[in-house]
Length: 394
Length: 95
Image 1 (cartoon, each protein chain N blue to C red):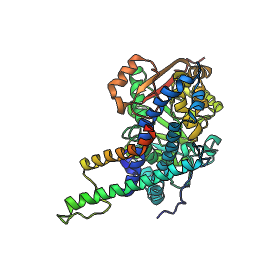
Image 2: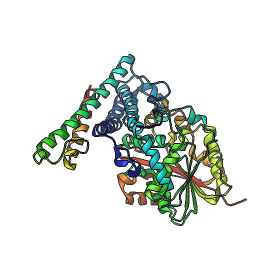
Image 3: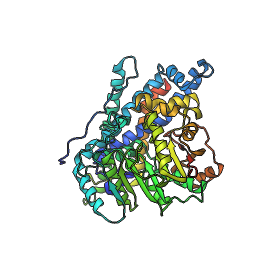
Image 4: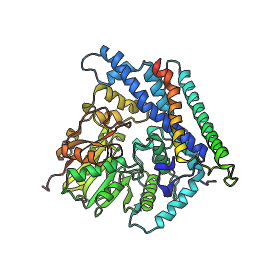
């Protein structure tokens, strides 16, 4: 499954290993599309009628637990998740030295002025250090030092198998879609400096440089091997970006040093106190008039009880302990609490699935449409994003 | 060979169980491993069959890891794979 992986960092799976990966992608596609649809149909026909008025996603979960389809769906999904990582891990073990060598060569290449700044003394937050998020063995912060790319390679190659094409040819459909949407939503907005929080391997960081070529684009994360991978990937793709090992709750940048602070699939990995700290930090980092923008899972308040239950599956069964707590928050309240104004939210059509015209139409429509496709990795996915603006200087 | 330590094989944390008898979770996992192994063999056989039918006659193309199916045959095989997975789960959705 090297199709979606950065070519200069691609692994060399044998045909048997490629076949094993393709099987896992097919399995996930089947579980998340037809099997999920059958489970929902079962819910609507046999379980929903017995639920009381005002039932929540938690009530749906309680009612579904004993259902045979839910059990098969869930057991197959957990097994498929483990098979994702198992299908790429041995190849990385075999090619880990080669990846390190490729990193060194790409880092030495001066094709772009992009930089990498690591901070070996940075404490790894407990929400990262204590978990293997989405059952990825070793998690994002796994690091053997000295040019090691393994965690980044595990994530990118795993994501290629995991997403069965729904994240785009270069696994950056979210960043591409939202950057295109923003350019049409705010045609006069021209940031000089963009910051991507919790950027991992930089998939959703680089689209900002393409959307705003004059901007200085920076990505931060706590995971060193992912950042090395991000730097090598950006160098290989010829896109200038700056990657810094830093904690988004206390980023090492001066006040008012960015015009756009963005994150993608990051906030739901944090405890509530850290989410609020990140919002305060974004407010500190933004210049007056600057924009905070997050791609995230949609909040429970925007979804039906069933769809809320469906998305919260990861919180219960996929090592995503902060997922539900995050989705119980009300984005408008959190954005206002941190001092931002002009809250907005939008459902941005996937560029790969719907095309650019649909994104332009969505930018003109300016609303977040609730649907069972919103934020759900499956056919016809749309990306939920929201944000607010920093007011003028006091 | 790599001079790095091997990556961890298992995710930390308790593995979820969904059936009243955990043996069913275990058996489903075994079934999916077996299905994956079957599919790996199926793809290898498809490559070998294609090579036998098309390449061996010219005696210039070896059957090795570089021998790949042409795009059209690969697409047919991908459809067959999706169909195979759907058949595996058909008793679940129809039962």
